[in-house]
Image (cartoon, rainbow, N blue to C red; front, side, top):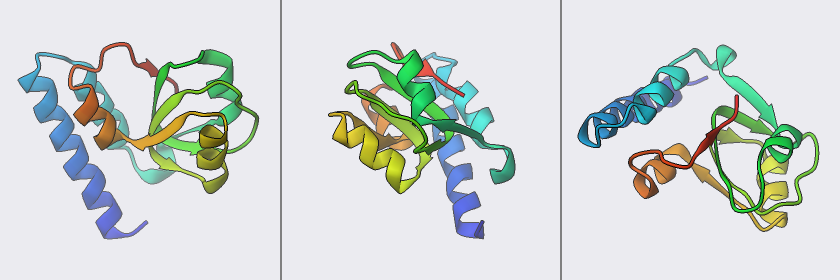
Length: 118
């Protein structure tokens, strides 16, 4: 893990805390704590797990890494710190979207109707 990657996660966490305060929502503050962990301790979630817990058109947040093991057939929007190439491909092939946490924060500043997996 490069220093730039760690610095970027720290900047993202600070922006999340700011968003939480501005919108009187603890959601982004909680996610900020989760992504501040060392890279070795970030959660890893497979596509198969997302498929089990998400239904069509859900918004899912993974405060870590999405991996490509398993299948997904529903169009789900998934936000995460990182995606493997196969995970991103499977999400998009199912008609879903793979986006960054920063993009989701811009779209949903209160964090409403988001399922956290991981």
